[in-house]
Image (cartoon, rainbow, N blue to C red; front, top):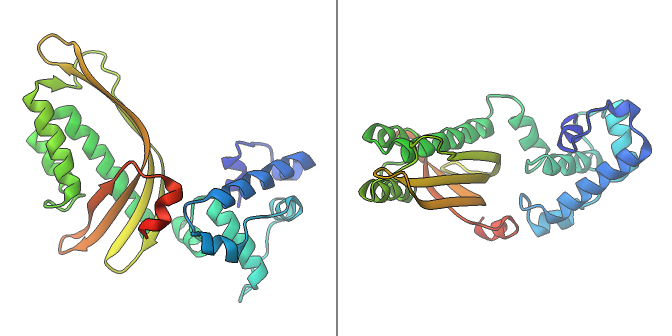
Length: 243
């Protein structure tokens, strides 16, 4: 679980940490577990939302032997650390770190779709819209929302391609919420800054500056997995009500 140190932005080897580092790490993990939107309140109550600094020290210093079958107490500890690292449980964490897991495939689909969405806003072209269809169901609310933005800005003669335009987007995080046979839900943490300017005089017409969480719903179609809906903004702590 070296990712724990990475998330905490502690670069020193765990074996050389002073005690207050482990206390700080445990405090961060406990805070995250208590407020996490990845698992429900019922799951928090069953799992628990605390890990001791001594347990964390033992894991990071000496490793954590995982027997087969794994005992419940050890599994609970691994589940807690997995939630802290953005996965629903230990099994999801293992899948996400295989590189070709279902979770990583769905995350890449959403990541590629976001890049295509930004290109659609930037270039306002039919080619950009066609690229979106690689990731969205062509009749879905998700792609229709993007096309509506493209059509409106084109009609207004707005652009993001004027000189020195600082428009950008950034995906801070993508988490799998649930994976079912025909439906997958993901939560993203996104930043968007779109500075729309007039194509005639280069004057600023509108600035879209948002940092929010978005819920993506993917559905299995005859053409493979496609995005159907992305809903925003959504408060992470209320996500469990959508599941």
